[in-house]
Structure formats: C-alpha cells, structure tokens
Length: 319
Image 1 (cartoon, one colour):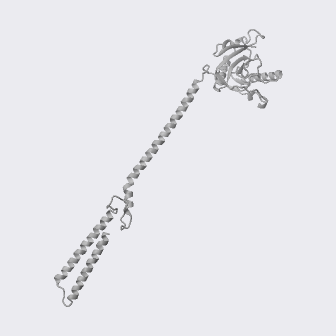
Image 2 (cartoon, helix red, strand yellow):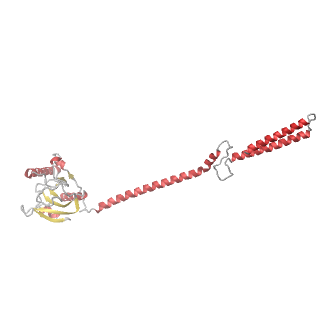
Image 3 (cartoon, one colour):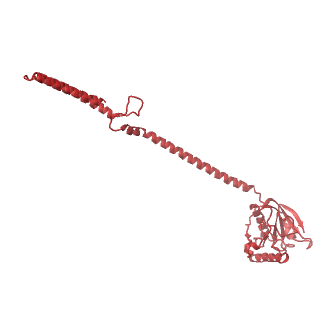
C-alpha cells in the first residue's frame, strides 16, 4: 500500500509541475522564463521525485526482508501485496530444529520401549526355565543312577503285527507297586541270546495259557531291558495282586543259590527311575518280591539278598 501511495504521490507532483509549467508557458508565451525560475522548477521537481523514490525503495526493502505482518500477534496474516507467500518458507526454516528434536524424542521413546519389552521377555523365559528345573528337582529319585537305561522295544523281538498283541490297558496312569521276580529259566549275556529267551517265554505262555508274555519288562544279563507288556498294560499273572496298579519285572535266569550280575541290578534301578520320569510310576512306589513255597525253600534267595536292602522295600508276596 505504501508503494502504491508513493507512486500516486509522484504522479500527482509531476502533473502539478507540468500544469504549473504549462500555465507559465501560456502566460508568458511571448516572454521566455528566466534562467533562475527554470532552475528552481527543476530542482524542486527532482528533490520531490527523489524523496518519493527513496521512500518507495525503503518500504519495498523492508517488505521483502520481513514479509510477515508484525501489526498483530497473529503470525498467520500475510501481506497480500507480496508476490510469493514466503512466510511458509520462513516458518519451515524457523521450526525445523523443533521438528528434529521431536523426531529424536520419539525415536528415543520407541527404542526404550523396545528394550523394555525384550528385557521382560528375557526375564519371563528365565523364570520358566528356573520353574521347570525346580519342578524336576522336586521329583524324588530312588538312587543316583550311573548305568544308562537301554530299552529293547517289543517290535525288535516280536515280528508279528501289533494288532496281534492285544492287552488289557491299565486303569491308572501311574502305578503304585513294583514286583520283581526271576523267570526260572536260563541266563543270557548278549542281546541275541536274551531275545531268544524272551521269545521262548512268549511262546510258552501262548501254548500253555493262550496269553501273551505276562511280564511288563524283563532284564537280561547283557544289562538291557526288554519290553513285554510295557507301562500301559496289565500284567499277566492271575495269582499276583494289584493288576491295575502294579508293574511286574522279570529277571532272566534262575537265582536261588547265585546272585544276578551287578549290571542286572543297575539296569533294574535305571528301569524304575525311567518309569518315574515318564510319570508311569509313583515316586512313593512300593517294592515287593515273590516266593513260591511249593517249589523249594530258597526260591529266589540269591535274587532278593540285595533287593531287600533297597529303599521302598515292603516284603514278599507268597503264591
């Protein structure tokens, strides 16, 4: 607006001088103006024109330097006479550091939150591992087992389809009793010989009674356990108690006057420990032996000489 007023002022002054000069010329057409008058008109005209031009230039320069309106506190008011809306550029440059600071703050918060979540997950995983370890440590072990448990599954020595080995399942998942007795047969010291004896026991039981091998497991002189009816089926001895809560373990051989080899005892301990680990036997199980008085007085005397010293021993079952 100031530029507009300055331009109008210049035009008005020029017109006044032209009109004045023309009037002088018309009045004194016959007489020429004096040299002093002409110089006065020219100097006044140049002086006013210079002042108007400088005022317009100063106002224009101030406007370019500060295009934002300073008349009020509202910085969103723009000078409509300025050709470009340069305040947007000025605002962008002015507030750029604040935007950068805010972005850095957001990134810092996100990083801190991520680290916090990862820390919580790590502590949760560590807590689960410690809980599982303490739970396993609470399971009582009958004894330290140095001998590894080695199971020869039924399909290794029994080549018939599994459907032909139908057995009555146990009503309880975790049994309460373990009965150990000898097979009153020959002994074996390698896997091939033990498999032959296990197959013979299976064939004798089938030919005599029409039933499968009555033992849940058998322990051979080679230090291995041979699966009979397993952990999930009832034993096949009708004269023994606890058909639904008892595991029957047979020691391959006859042990009246002689004792089983130490490896057989170690494998029997490993079998009991594995049964507890699989939750197929209660940690508070009871251990029994079997004596048949009708055979001879020292039946299985060599077998129970050591087993009677084991923990959980409860005594004999007489048949």
